[in-house]
Amino acid sequence: MINIHEVVETNEMIEKENLDVRTITLGISLLDCIDSDLNKLCDNIYNKIYDTAKDLVKTGDQIAREFGIPIVNKRISVTPISLIGGAACKSPEDFAKIAATLDKVARAVGVNFIGGYSALVSKGMTDSDKMLIESIPLALSTTDVVCSSINVGSTKTGINMDAVRLMGTIVKKTAEATKEKDSLGCAKLVIFCNAPDDNPFMAGAFHGVTEADKIINVGVSGPGVVKTALEKVRGENFEVLCETIKKTAFKVTRVGQLVAQEASKRLGVPFGIIDLSLAPTPAIGDSVADILHEIGVEHAGAPGTTAALALLNDQVKKGGVMASSYVGGLSGAFIPVSEDQGMIDAVEAGALTLEKLEAMTCVCSVGLDMIAIPGDTKDTTIAGIIADEMAIGMINQKTTAVRLIPVIGKGVGETVEFGGLLGYAPIMPVNKFSCDEFVNRGGRIPAPVHSFKN
Image 1 (cartoon, rainbow, N blue to C red):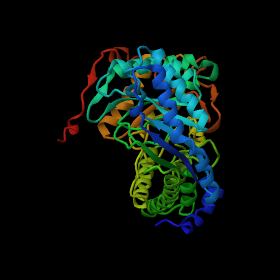
Image 2 (image 1 turned 120 degrees about the horizontal axis):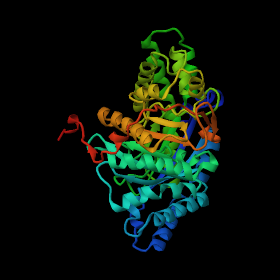
Image 3 (image 1 turned 90 degrees about the horizontal axis):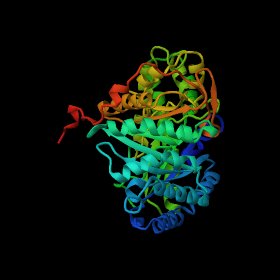
């Protein structure tokens, strides 16, 4: 059993080391909202979400006050909308109307983001899937808190290169549609391989069809806590280093477990999973790159960085699984550039490139995340970068993702400011050589041989 005494020992982590519960995410199934009439469908969606989530923000705030634990975000994830809108939507504009409904109800209940404007197309696309994907630039440019994710590959099915090629174009169109806001729409769009059904983190959260009608998933984050713990064992060997990370991850996960149980009880919603992800913020001292520096590399990107990140990711998972019976989502280290001051510093120092970030994604929990690139980057080049990252996920049987932001009107050497948790980012150079013939082949890259385990 978890008791308040376990939380007391984390007070210093909260007050001085940026420990927080990054999000309580309420997953809601919309399968019972399906209707062939678009207006009726939108009404059903609004009413289901409002009735289920109306007390989410209030409850999260109450728990934060009572236990003294910062709960930064309250979010909602819903069933992938391509499945929900298939009977009613006859055009991309119809799907955008559903996005507007999601935005309206999310603002009505007061959450920070709503995820699930999504399609799962790792093996092929239905007409509904394709219409939703084509609606993304309009949907994300006309809403404030809606997040979109598209799963284009998996270890079991391979990579849908038609979807990858299309997403290269969609990312560029979304950038154009939101160019007045420095292409901010792309910060709310993620392309996945092996997307998990229970991820509470945005922009990639959706409520998987294997989930219950409603569920509470909690994401905890504490890069600053891990860094501070490692400062106390500076110079020690790897055994001591690993034990320190593991024990710290255990304590952090226990905090999340307490919050998840309380939220579940008070909302009357089953508890799903704890996602222990070291998700940084732009705040000083809340950086995954700073942990890597503390482990011993001068800057993120220096030789040894990938090994240090692999060690960190593994020990975080080992500590987390001992602290909760239900660890899920992504659970590991995030390496978004714009949201991590240490990563930004590494890019500006010339230590960190797009290619090194790609290598690091082989051993971390996500992928190429929140990376600003020149606005004149070709859509085929974006598709090629997506394909590379999907291949890493497919072959390594892990989740990988791409959240690139081609900032229209800006180039290498300039900086883009997103604000809030999204931070700011230096625009990184992209390989100029063409992959047009590769991404334009069409079809599907088959699943690897180790996928055949039946």
